[in-house]
Image 1: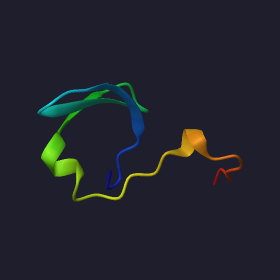
Image 2: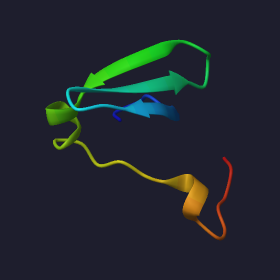
Image 3: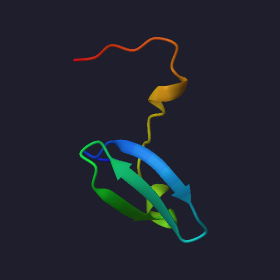
Image 4: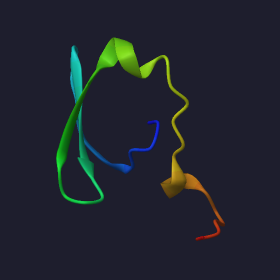
Length: 50
């Protein structure tokens, strides 16, 4: 989301918990996630690292 990257730890009814690449926990409201474009890099067959 935006400039944040991480791994989803738990998806709940009201919030979604994400562990950032830096190790910081992030909490997003579930309704707020619908406003962002989210990329699932794990399911990509090939990806390029910059």
